[in-house]
Length: 224
Image (cartoon, rainbow, N blue to C red; front, side, top):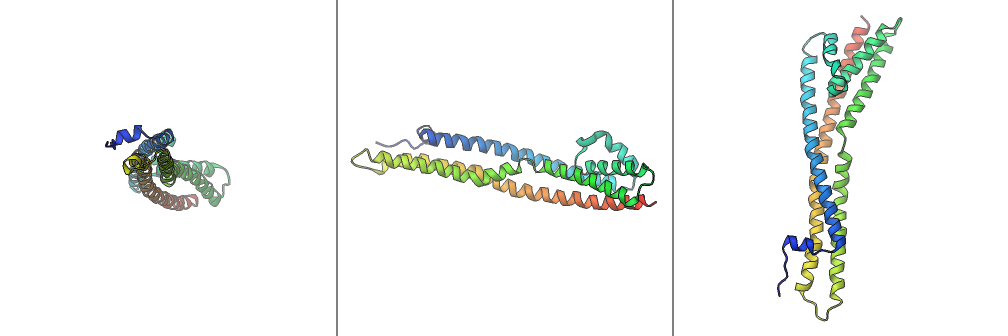
């Protein structure tokens, strides 16, 4: 008598606990892949937006004109545009105050830009902790399902007088599927987390460099 070791039969024949572990890992894997593709699109759009704005900023045009072109978009502009709008708006407001100290004006603009920078980085880092959690915990969740399944398989052997490999193989096989699903969920999440964390760090450095360069420009204008 040969045991049916097809994948579908092993999953449907698994114990309720192992099936629950498999279902959990499947949901986590689907959610993780959804976040991976969304994050990929978000970071690509952020890079393209940064390149486009830098081209406009360093084209030599008037900053006031650029501000009026970008500011109607508000926070939807995102990235460097959002940092620029926050800094230039505060700079113009403080500069209009009577007796405003040039350094105080620049420092006020820098604080606003730092807040905008922090907001942009927080948005870019959204869902990265989830990917890190999936990458670090999924193998252990799958291992739990494997241990539970193997334990049940060996407990079942205690009820028979003569144990054979054919009797224990299906239970071990269905248990090992949980480990495979844990790895299937974890590996893409770890790769995506490392890659996207590096991409966010590069964008953060790019934003920070722009902030410093723009601050230098505002400092020169404040003393005029």
